[in-house]
Image (tube, rainbow, N blue to C red; front, side, top):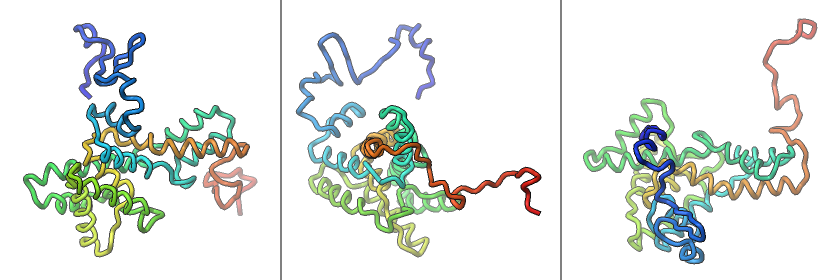
Amino acid sequence: MSGRSALEHYKNGGAWWETEISDIKKDSIIHRGKRIEDLIGNVSYSQMLFFLLVGKELTEQQAKLFESVLVAGADHGPRAPSIAAARMAATCGVSFNSAVATGINMLGDIHGGAVEGAMELLYKTNAELTSNKNAVADTLQQFLAEGKKLPGFGHQLHDRDPRVSRLYDLAQQVIDSGEITGDYLSILEDYRQTMSAVKKRTFTINVDGISAAIQCELGIPAEAAKGIFSLARGMGIVAHAYEELMQGTLIKGPCPNEEKLVKYTGDMPEDMQKE
């Protein structure tokens, strides 16, 4: 972000809104130099997303790989805060799109942000490797010294995330075809092996890590990662919110009304204080 003033830019002769993405006029819709009628039916959802975002075209194999990342992130059940929030909202009488928006708005740095962090790490490491062959080990040491968690590794539920091996297999096919280099996947694996050696136990890559490496292979900006994840998880959010809506449940809170699940830790009235 340049930090420029919109009003100053406009007063200096710029348009109020400037975009290279779309030109919409009466009876005409142009996206990055292509007519919408030439795109409809000829590009997939993942190709269109990449085209609008980056301004380049994915091959069919690259697009299939990108789409596999979207599918892998689509849903993780009501344990995921975004899914739970959407389902709770659906029981409270809000409009369906508001229930979906509630789930989407739960996605941020903590829930849904690991892909962006992992992409930043991979891009930075790849740049540093040109002048420092020990960039992986040095960066890992810095993370450990600062007490930070390396993004893209481990999972609170899965010992071996079932999505990871499938995404690796699909990525390998595109590497074999020469349509991605595999450099970022190699860096990710270097981090896994180095961390496992340092900690003297086996670390596993999670879906965020492999998704980050694949998106780096395709040249997607790290800053767009949370938005892309929102599109992926949005599929699950829509499905879960709709299911809850159809079940007709009313006012479902975050947990059942059981004392052991909610503990009051504040002050009590004097006549209720224990002696």
